[in-house]
Amino acid sequence: MLEPVDPRRLVPRTDDVLRDARLVAAEARLGRPAVKAAVAAAQEAARRGEVEPQAVPDDAVRRLPPRPSSLTPVLNATGVLLHTNLGRAALSRAAIDALVAAAGCTDVELDLATGRRAPRGRGLVGALLTTVPAAADALVVTNNAAALVLAATALAQGQEIVVSRGELVEIGDGFRLPDLLESTGARLREVGTTNRTTLADYADVINDRTGFVLKVHPSNFVVTGFTAQVGIEELATLDVPVVSDTGSGLLQPDPTLPDEPDATTHLRQGAALVTASADKLLGGPQGGLLLGRADIIATLRRHPLARALRVDKLTIAALEATLRGPRTPTYEALHVTVDNLRARAATLGKALHDKGIEHEIVETTATVGGGGAPGIDLPSVAIAVAADLAVRLRLGDPAVLGRVERNRCLLDLRSLAPQDDDALSSALIAAHQSDAT
Image (tube, rainbow, N blue to C red):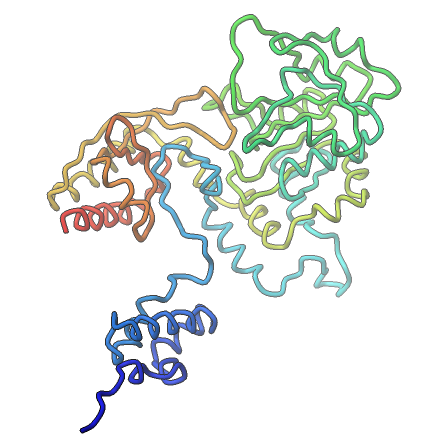
């Protein structure tokens, strides 16, 4: 009598499974290690009796990751336009196209006309100076914290940086500005009090050991009541350079954000150097902008630390395209009208109604986020659905992130690009069907 065949012996060999046309195609897209891992998991499931041996190729295909990177695209329906946990600004189509074009070999440090080496990022510097004519020169580093580190190291190492006590901020995740500045070898000279600082407070401590006066925009909180602070125009009367950390990356005044400082205004008021983030209100990739006097930028550019903090070709390409290209998704989200949001909500609501999904269109408020424009509420419109759909939406494909308030999941349309409305509708329908199942 024949012994029964152990089903584990029927599990196909790895090489045989990898010859499946679907897996061959996936290997070109995801890489061989990811495909082999999916095959191994399917084989192990078959050995445990969870999958029929002949179904191993199908199971391996189901286990393939959707993309080679572990980062998952998310539809931002939180109402926070610049959500730090979601990577802040979404790039414009022009910036994305520039990234793709720069992904291969590019003339990042080459003059094609002469065949000789050329200054790195020269087109980006030109775009910055066109956008901010008040700046004599510009430099870009990896982020705004790096911009401050470079400025403090090159201009004030072993010297004093004079700063108001009310501006020694913590910007999140335990990251404190005083710790950053002191790590450069500069000494902080704090003046004034938490709520009030005057020009005399600065003037009293200026001496031959002063590297510069630092003006920091407290971009993630607002102090009200009995307060006083000194503006750039007054600080510029002191006999030392003034460095302004505007933070949120606004390059020109914007009536929508009347209290948000911008680089152009501060330079015209006498700041010697302005630093800012590129991935906030500017709407570009992560980067730190340094704009100001030509002699100061030259000093920063020549400092050895500038090499360690320089940006790569992808950042250069995306940021230049952001500056030269059409309005960014961040700009559009900031300036979209409430009537436009209501119209989008009505269209989405009809699609959900046709599928029998309970929902409500509600008026709400959005925020800028990303450490910008604190205290500013932006009128908005949201689709409100059952709170228990929030998790299903977050774990769906595409992932959708909303916010839960008063036992409802609000999907705020101001932070969501209009072209993603259909994807949001499909995600809601899929989440609802999963719930019903």
